[in-house]
Length: 493
Ligand code: BES
Ligand code: MN
Ligand code: ZN
Image: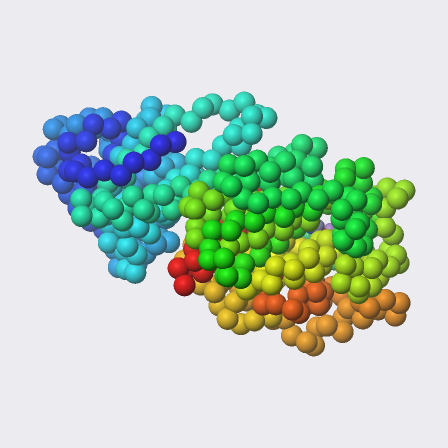
């Protein structure tokens, strides 16, 4: 899909369809008023008929208005004008894009000119583009399912002439985040027989080539040399070889300490010998969505050519039951030298991440953020709207929370109190890999915190946010918007 920024009066625009807003109480937006005037009150007449009140997200399609150049007008409800904010704006944009009929290849949208408190044209255009890309995403981008090609080819975003430069910058920003989100969705949606650790390694190399990142994809022998005994313990149950991916985007000052992103890349989680129940097990192909969000964020900052130093680390393998797999009771020695009693082989995410966190030390990072579909307990605690955020540094947590709010990809700050740590006590090793049912997402974070003592660190548990189940099953691309915004904010400091 192609986006462009345009100026001009709505009645003169020759598009297949123009999208204009109506507030609740049948109150016309400026663009709608304009069209109403040229069409001898055709819009007012339709509203008076009772077909539309302006409720948020409702849509009504009008055809062939007199003296209006465009073939169709799509009215979209904006809700109460006093309540109209970014959230409502995004909802209206999404509803309008989804309501466009099949015959529309070329749409003009007059929503970015609406006044929103604390939002400028840059942000409104960026969000419009992000939402439109999200709403029109097709799984067939990966060519495994034949779907009808998207009818909609072009979207022109109308803004006031004086706002054009801001709008163009917002457009670039939105396209970059949209591309990152789409990549993360694509990778998540791929079947696990295609999206293997080897495949993720290749994707990282392809990204590096496109955007000029430094890249290393370590194979098993090199991972062994590093002493990543915990990561390799998980990998040993599968015939798919593991990979450890190191990506570096070094566009900041030479002396600037990098921000490190660490992704969990379990390309399929059966649970291992502590086998998961069969129902919905296919969804464990999404257990690499942390890794996908790192790659997606790299794509976004690559597109933006963001002036910052960022390192991406991905530990990726399968978690399979096999004659050679780790067993409950096995003790693994991590790269940090700490020993881990594996009481449940299904708590494998922390086992691969702990070694990646130790590896991160060598970059002397300004901050490390890991992203993982880590615990079902996080979904029980927080549901599917926020990602769980844990951190050993309140200032870093605040940065991530703020980025999430800005990006409409929110996280919720969870406790990481000392009191929870004893749940990980083991009689036989330095720690156990599980801490019981109580506070399961917190004890998982506590486990990771033991390997993140040398730097400011945060952990995002995205088990509830990385994909959707049911009829709408599919990757969400979260938390690419949060992470990208976090890095954009850091680059601006
Ligand atoms: N990948 C899962 C977490 C998960 C489960 C995410 C369901 C989304 C939906 C993780 O590896 C896992 O299996 N965690 C266990 C930990 C437990 C054994 C302590 C869990 O959450 O049940
Ligand atoms: Mn598991
Ligand atoms: Zn897992």
